[in-house]
Amino acid sequence: MCSWVQEDIVLHTGDGMKIEVEKKYQNLFDTLIEILLQNPHIRIDQLKKKVLTNHSVNDEVIDEIIYYLLSKNCLAIVEPSKRFERTNIKLIEKPEIELKDDHVREEYPKILISLPPYNIFGLETELRQLDFPINTLKEEFQKLFEKANHSIYICSPFLEYNGFDTYLPTLLSKVKDGVDIKIIARQISITDPDTRYEQIKRIQKTFEKKKAPISIRNYHFFKERGVVSSTHAKMIVCDYEYAYVGSGELRRNSFDKNFEIGVILKGEKAYQLGKIFDKMFSISIDFLIQEDKNGTVV
Image (tube, rainbow, N blue to C red; front, side, top):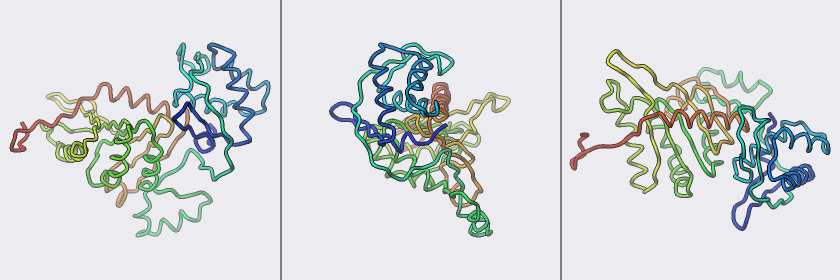
């Protein structure tokens, strides 16, 4: 999958839809939009075939453009299909295109690691000798949250306030701007033998005090004989465009002690992880704080 879309295209809201496009992709965009305007709806493989007759470009570039425009509601799915190529789409609103100057481009997938412990044991020096960038978990999570314009979905099984608080200013600001934040954790129930209720309650209370609503759910199911299903997945999905998946999560140990590694994906795979999150969230259990007037859990 290519890695240029989000860096080379930026959607602006306001009076209509406006997209900034690097000069080298102007003709490609013009052709794609023109085909969509000429067809009330069109199958993706047919659209790609028409575009490729006029442009020598990897068809994965067109895939990323389509995913991008779908995520920004410029396009709509008319007839879904199990195969992306056979999905029917239509243009909702013609975006206004402006040319954009050259700039620095990030490469995806992006490898993330937790650097702090390496300084102690000398591993950072060894890794710096490799011929690729070293991106830290803590810093890249911040960048990921800052990119979000519509949604931030977090699956963090052992979510803790210490670690999560690193991103509170950004996340609170995002909620105020209308970004939908959903969180999946585990063992939240007060009746769980290893309950993590207090940690999650502290996060929930912080957002409530700021009148910034978020949704937290519990993916942890058990019966008398023990746990039957629980999440151990660590992932973050923003706008269905970017997604982190790996061993690290939003807790202090992941940033300061543990050796963690993961990747940030963009495009189709990020979209798919977002849909997986949706399914998990739909069957998880709402987290509700139930306390009496003295603050005692009831």
